[in-house]
Image (cartoon, rainbow, N blue to C red; front, side, top):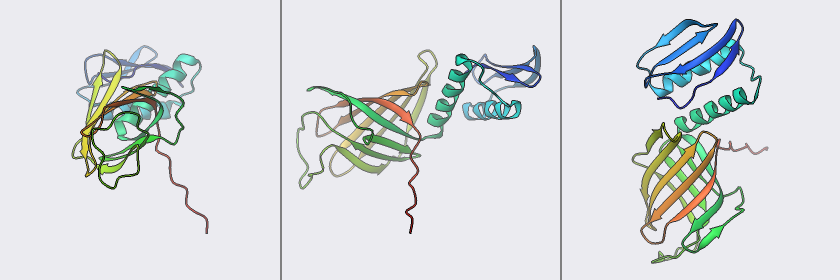
Length: 209
């Protein structure tokens, strides 16, 4: 079942998006059924909702509608596979580490995964000639799994990566409110958890000549 459902005002009344059986979306305006789709996938349904919001001139009139739109945008961002996890704090076997700077992140760009994160924990072995510290890599995944838990309203994104320094088993759990938990298990050091937020990928500004 698609992880969104809300009401919004349209020019002729109220549009209600009703999510029944998995993949079924009913769009209702003024209590009259004006559109019904069957066997839609999540991305198609999200596109349909976005289209209706654009055509109806959607204007959030209260906190509920504004929150629903924010959650829809977050679902679209995560579904796209192009986003960044920004670490705000960390936890490992040696303790808690709060108030990390916003420079620490992990970027998911299709199958490309780029990490720039601090590491707090114990290493079993240190790669030769590796003085960079932290969790830093820019690798391409063979596959990234993405699952939706309808009961908990959570996305789970997981993948496994490897380079000459270490192996990385990554599990990212994210809610529609934008808060997320990132766990990394390594071959050469102890696990670590990061807590933070899901955000859009920053666009690099072109240097002025």
